Image 1 (tube, rainbow, N blue to C red):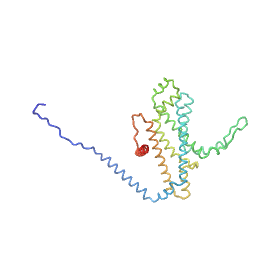
Image 2: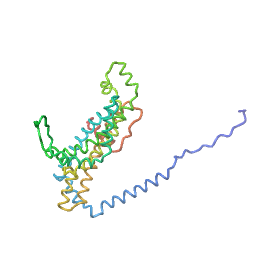
Image 3: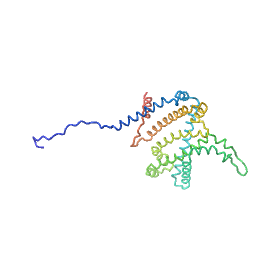
Image 4: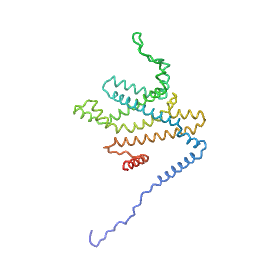
Length: 304
């Protein structure tokens, strides 16, 4: 630039934040819908919130909640243990093990849990007794109805389908681990079982945990199907009550509130498990608001 020639300086411009009118408009619509929905909940007389509050902590309802939690826990153990075994069989180079696992998945994923519940509950019509007879000598004999109680029927009808679905979750997690991990473990003379237990599965858990949490929540809700075999879980309990007092809608709301509470607790547990197994991962798990609230509460308790 020659002296004496003053170049024109650019005008000073004020930085203005980018506006998002569409976001605000959609937020207003959603808030309006929520206000309308809240008004419906409060003003609809058929909901009978006084009846809901009187039965929410009723001893019979609480017993149904406990039975639901017990059923959920046992079904999850059955599904996760059996599913892990089936997944390992599916990945086995042994043709027999691979074929059996594939047939297991095909059968139990292809038949509805409700059909399986009814089948197991009526197994006595096919096999009246369980007995072991050898050379005309009966070692033991027991009535099928004695074994296939509503509780056992529900465990089999819910646990076996879950194991078939969970086996695919485990298989996907194992396949997500780089094959180089197997080769490195083999170089250190680790057995396939040691490699799976100490190297592969810990890395696969980051992939396995999110769908496992989803399956746990689904299992909790699927326990309501056990009412078809007269197992006294939450839905069966409230249905027994409303068949007596004819307060159908309020009692269904009681059941829905308990299911919402229990699934929320499971969702929080799922988040903390994801955080535990996501350590070292580049992608951070986004924390839901309810999980952030409980994280802050637990943090204050620890520092107190």
